[in-house]
Length: 299
Image 1 (cartoon, helix red, strand yellow):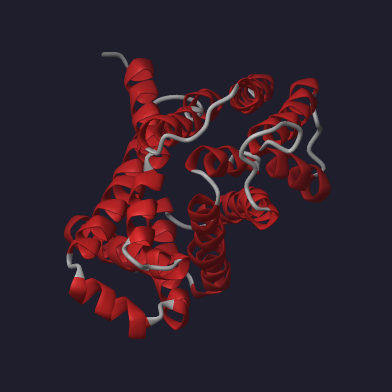
Image 2: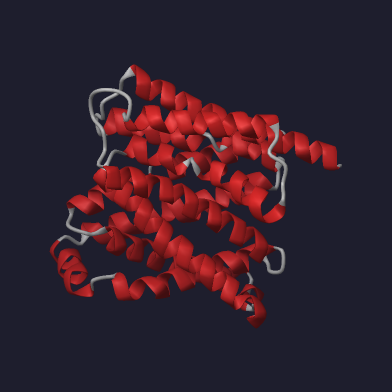
């Protein structure tokens, strides 16, 4: 298998790992855990696993410049506390397919923020992607149609999930310019875990885990599948293919997330919702095409 095919397969596997997150979240929610408690367990196990991996493979990754610590702390706060809470709240209080599609408003926010702060040009493809994303989210959430419509708060948290994810990507990109990506990932997880401690609700978390030890196993699997495996597949795949193609293959996540919602959680599926999902996926593909063309022009 050549590098292009291998890279594509790895990015698709990463998207699949991220796309099944609602299976774990809904189980842990039904077991009696809140959004912040689920976030706490995920970041705790993730920090533990990554520390172990770095300790075994390359202890030099523990070294980090004190000047950049504030930036990584900010990434940890947004990634571990803000993003996880918003995303998990949306999954629990709306539907898996809606949550994952609203998450993918993030490229829109990246385009807007990049225009405001970095004066990046909004190309024709990016503009069309903006329009498709907005219309797609309107269709998916059922604002214009009949049938199920999530609570307004869940729609708001879903859109804010996209914004927080976009901010996380921009800040992480800034951090990895000065530090090793593995070091940034490691300390992001450590700070995420630390910031979540005050919100972990130990007085209820411990009794729930004691009454049903399986919750710890599911939380650990949540970490392994949606954090460790997904990050590994994505990082290795990104080294084999250009970022523009990676964005295209990464569209696997909303597809898998939507299919999980429809076939596992038996969520309602109508024509408008399907059209909305297709619109958002088309927007991701257009942004990937635009990024790929910009990369070719800069070479």
